[in-house]
Length: 541
Image (cartoon, rainbow, N blue to C red):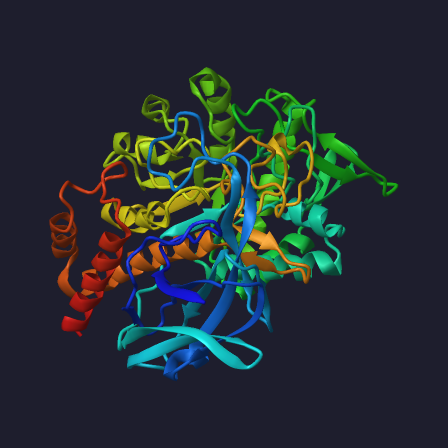
């Protein structure tokens, strides 16, 4: 049995011995979660038991890293900062270790260990990972972990990964608003919150996102609508249930689903209603043009009652609205009319949209733009709040992203950059999108990871659906959350020495000024940076 201890910034491929340096240990704050890996290769097929030993073993969770198929590793114009650019099996899904694990001889595997002291332990100790066969230890490795007597500051950055409730209904074959619907969604939302997502896309109406023109996504409409002659009444009971569930899971912000279709606000989203006889029908959708006075009247009626619901449930500062995702210059006239309508209905509410053209923003059509990270420099210092996002297109110029084919430092470095730029919000479109592009068909995310060749694998989701109705996390989500913990550690240090000194420190640690396209590409650099941050925190206790 060959065994190596590696950091959380490595990826272990079954057909390649890891080349990374030995990882001896790390420090962490006492309310933090920190991870490392145990890579191993057995000479023969085996069934192994895995256990942790040491004082910190009570706070350790063990996961077996499983491979998934990657079809599209990257876009044709991608840069050279990738582990591989070919299709094949890539490590990604983390399966909790429960009993024996089966391995094939000659292949490399990894055990992911996450330590979470939960403020119950402080000090330095050794944690050992032991592999056994038939009760006999066959290999082991250890790290030294120092838990510092200090807590991370609370996350203040608004973080949303678009949540797709309809995809869960499709995968588990459950009806929207059924008991199973609520149980499964609670599980997936809790996992999101546990990994730094504090804002949830809330389907007041079925979100008009990534939908083929003329096509439909499964109806997951939280607000009930009844037609009463020429007027409407609204039932907010399921929305209230959703808000209460999310808050119980730790959600702080609610992102109201888009009120017009994607890429230009040309149509209304799908909205269903019941008539006086209880018959359900679609009253708005692709046939509803943006100029529809009937839809305008509906929005005003809905908006008045939704604002009352928001006031009653203390959501005024916790709701974020959208008009249409990613409008372009050709959509300006239509978008601006729709924006003015939404501004008049939802007065003083935060309205954001993904937008990367600064001259579009200058028209006043978008109050709070969310530019992609390769356009963020155009918006720095010129917007009320700086937000950013990335998606399938950001795989050139060394931009941070989290594709399966990318090295994990490219995933985690985002946190340090968000801190430096004082970004207030981060948006990504794919927490659990289990469809082909344009939602023409549901997929099995264990078999198709690139939306049928439409996006690089890893763009459209970061969690996997387990057979029990809860979320299995990806290696990428763990690393992404480490980046957010880096933000919180930098904020913790800032509270002790001031932001100016923290920024000076960051610049000294990099040959060139840190930016979304300029940062050291070595995992050891980022790990070392975090150790220095922790040491400075400890010195200032």
